Length: 486
Image: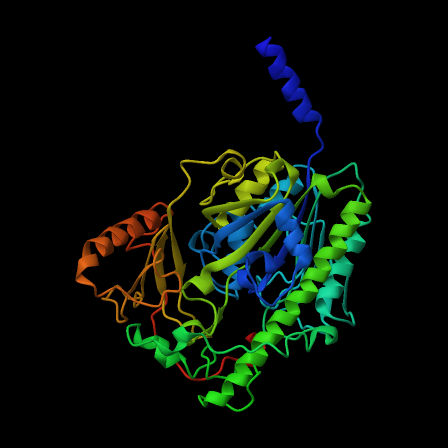
């Protein structure tokens, strides 16, 4: 009887159609810019609906808070030092396995539409995709020049979010229901320079946005944070061109900061419209419940916290990303509190699609965690970022985050002692990271334990004092980055 039941179950699983995968990837999206993650002002009913019908991961993080490294980690399940994309100018290696490539080899039709951003000046098709439509660099919010699968390069008039959705839906409508598909929609939004659609330009005019209070409490923080205040990545700098005359630390100049945040929020409203369009089509074609819908951000964003804008640092707004997954097999209305990472996406989606696993992964599938709980799930992980000469505003960063603690230190890059003050936060009592506890003698043993755990976690991915290569920290500089790469 048990053998017969096993055979029937196996036959049922074999007969079940493989799920489609719709992966919606946003750029620089803070979780708190979405209704389902607690936004008080940004209304995102269609993204919220995905969360209410699926799974919302309440604590998801990127392992490197920078576009290209993070995207490569999502595709590969690997940390940046292993996949090799450690900055925004490096190609994803053609020989490096990816989950879309694995799905393609397993019989899926695969496509990518939108911002890919690995290889700054390369808009040609990449391996593993039947259809690949992208552009060079960041693209523009209006009238981007697109490379249409290597066959034609042309400017398509219109707003980026609308155009990329049009392109994706055109391909989706051509797909046979006899073959599963995996499609990426890579939004530019809400990456700088934040430009809403005209219909949303004034959506938040009545909302006052002050600088966060942590911007003015930096005395116990590393000195580089104060040095950054007047740079490209500081609150008194140009604010991605929302401030025309800079630096400006006058109290009334907060209006420029407010306008910047309003612009950021406005771009998110169009993303919600895009989600509504694609979801409606899935319902009309009766593919909704057989499609794994992933809505995710590539990295977080600092909006004035600790006096900083942009990302790259190991502070919570820079690390946190939204993740929502709708697929009935996983259940509905669930909230997962455990720490999930970008490197978990590839193994998780391959498992859900019953596809072969990647040959190597630093991440772990969260399927068991979501469905039944996983007592062995991680309680700590590490973060790393390497100093960039093109953006000399953030030091080398090595950090560990546990369920309670965060320890951050800043290696100089030549093996010598750190030149910057380290940071320690009790996230349980101080989730906003307002008080740096690194010099509290009562916590010396905690710091020792965190340092040991950080070394252990890094070593598990092949990093030690000899293999952890990074640039020399040349300090915070005041010049603006090249206009071509902003």
